[in-house]
Image (cartoon, rainbow, N blue to C red; front, side):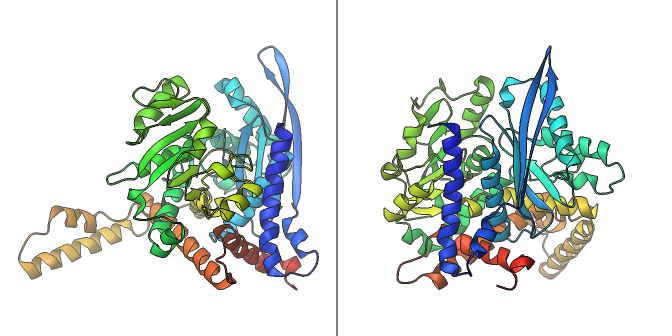
Length: 475
């Protein structure tokens, strides 16, 4: 199957999932199409001199809905990038932001490039030129369109884009807010790098804290009792796996990567595997565990929880019948096609959808953007006050008991709240509230048969977008 067919399939899957929820809303004719339509898309092509030759690069930035400003979404560097891809991902961003109550519209973009084929100096020239093309057309701005890292990009690329924006708009007081996911020293926020993976962990915590949800999925016990397969040990998969691999943790029995998969029923050492990948570029040859060259086949391994955390469309109508997990957690964007979703649902397999599960990145990006617009570090105004008040509490306890407070209690009460504490607490709260809203919607909207999580999530998101769209407000 060609890359174009795969991308078309991804866009079609997103549209069909939205259509399924729209059927339940019973909107006037044309309203659904207005909700789904992409507001604007820009394509840019530009030459960059690489060594002794000129190469022409093509990139896109799509705005799905600007019902809230700025619009938000990552910039992806991938050889598979195209306009359809940008539009589908932008739509997901609209629904994701609405679901978790982040007041952004949805946007996405990227450059058709394999970043592994270029050195740092070349990538910087390419990124800066791409940024300038978008900035001049109004597709990067702290007030209108704010990119973030995505597949193939990182803090480094965001720093280059920020610097390019500042060069073109030195008068903009809020220039530092034109991108999120920046390095800390350039206005980034603690916790953003691992935010998506941590958000997946909080989504799992929320699910397993609901005994009824666990029973409905055919599971027993707590999160720590499950066997987990993770596809993709990139930024999202690695931080998620690292958080899962704590004391009394679930067993991660398989990791699937580009060159194959590693399996061990006793549980894999994520830190050792990640270090090995950093040295070798893959998982093949990692000692002491089983290696399976056909990594895609391991998506069908026996486990309780399957977490695709890399690419879209990895679970499709060709393998969905053989998936053995009882719970599929979509840490990637669109890892299940529409057909696969229907097959898994018919087999009684529970799916936690991408627009909920991987929303942690945009939630913490929102915190970073607020921090940049406010020009003050989160918690700075009250940290010392909290510390002093905590010391008074400790003193009161010691006076009343005539005993010294334990060191752990003194430390807990007197250290004040750090910015990272606020970020993690707010992210956890955002994911838990979103899950509760999805659960409540499933109960309210179910008619005889329980509503699936994806449809419930889209119903919530579509209703919130409808309420905010002034051009559709009469409906």
